Image (cartoon, rainbow, N blue to C red):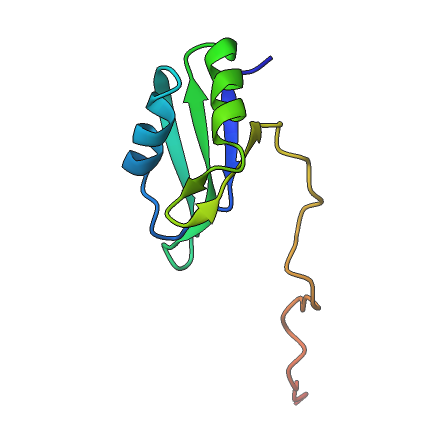
Length: 105
């Protein structure tokens, strides 16, 4: 079992310090990582919290999953590796440039 936790359904007002304080009650918090939107700089509503042992991680899941923080019921579980996503993204058509009018003399 891993000791890295996914914490979802966070309020946009929740800070890394808030997470640190909330999870420290259940063991030693090694790291908190609040995910931010690259474009807007606003929180994305989820974070990762790394506890020092798998036992502390399990204790934090049991205590924190469904509990309230900043008025939101948290979702807390073991963090899974990021799934591979097909490259590109964004959808829509891609244009390869050029194409303008060419006059021949």
